[in-house]
Image 1 (cartoon, rainbow, N blue to C red):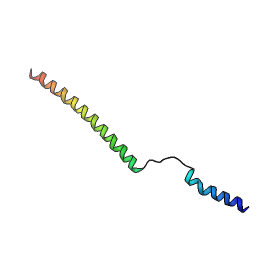
Image 2 (cartoon, rainbow, N blue to C red; image 1 turned 60 degrees about the vertical axis):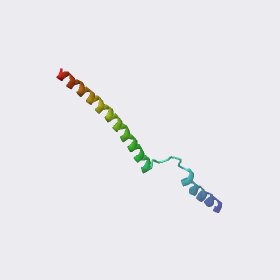
Image 3 (cartoon, rainbow, N blue to C red; image 1 turned 120 degrees about the vertical axis):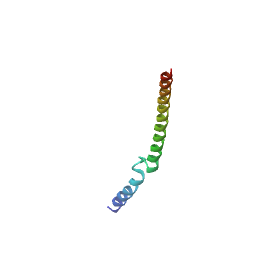
Image 4 (spheres, rainbow, N blue to C red; image 1 turned 30 degrees about the vertical axis):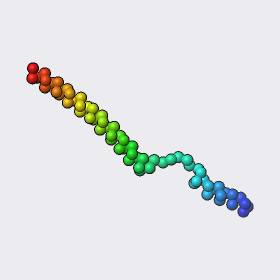
Length: 65
């Protein structure tokens, strides 16, 4: 019976180390993703602003004629 308890205890102690291989996302990973997402959104907003400025410039030129 002592051998069984020893084996069971050894098995229970090894489960936390080898039982779960899932890597949880850290706060740093979340911040990195947020920064990257913000950079992409800023680039897209810049492109849209440039398009709007070009369209406005064309309309001003049309009004001047």
